Image (cartoon, rainbow, N blue to C red; front, side, top):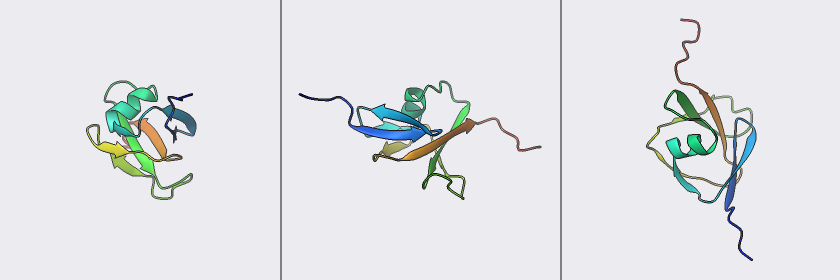
Length: 81
């Protein structure tokens, strides 16, 4: 009895089950429900990552592992500018 879920990651603290561990940043955003290119995808070192995460480009290939954590934020932020 085969299962299609191979891996799970967390995007903005929500569990996302995927059928492949090999995606681009854009594909991960789309699967998490974020469409368009107005989002920044950040890979976290763990929950509460003090660095704020590493920016993942849209065309960057990801090799996901169970439990990887990501944060999605609007790409047009100005931080008070």
